[in-house]
Length: 62
Image (cartoon, rainbow, N blue to C red; front, side, top):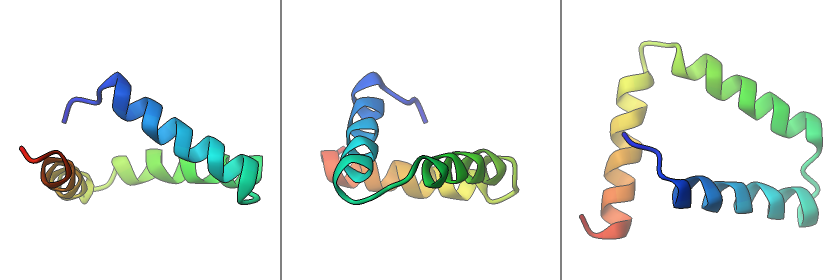
């Protein structure tokens, strides 16, 4: 899956809104980031990538 700049900007905006208005603390964001890196190193990473690709394809209509 190619991560595009608009996708990164959207996810960044979601994190900013969560931090600013929903009470997301810095340590929550860091814990989620570390969890993401650890999850990417597991054998489930290809399946997760396929699910995300399918969801993005469904949303964008591709």
